[in-house]
Image (cartoon, rainbow, N blue to C red; front, side):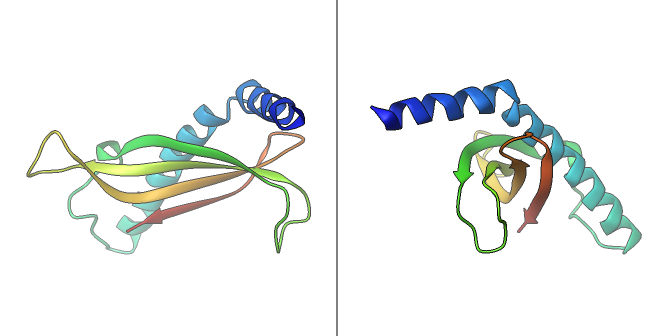
Length: 116
């Protein structure tokens, strides 16, 4: 019974802080920033624009013990896709974004953008 209560409290925290929307918006900003950095370094994104990426929420996780962070935090993950040029009904996974938020305040404290 106690696990169900803990789960209910965690779900309420995630919803109250709107962590899903926060993660997707932050991911979009990170993609735009990465694109600007790539352009400044004369790197190509194979013609893709930030608007081409399709973002899909993956999960929220509570990390309560970590080797480098001393306090518990939420990790929100967003999968990053591009449309498959050969099959318009399919999406190709091209990356993942992780937003780390403080458990108590809900403030973003770190993020990771991985494009493959």
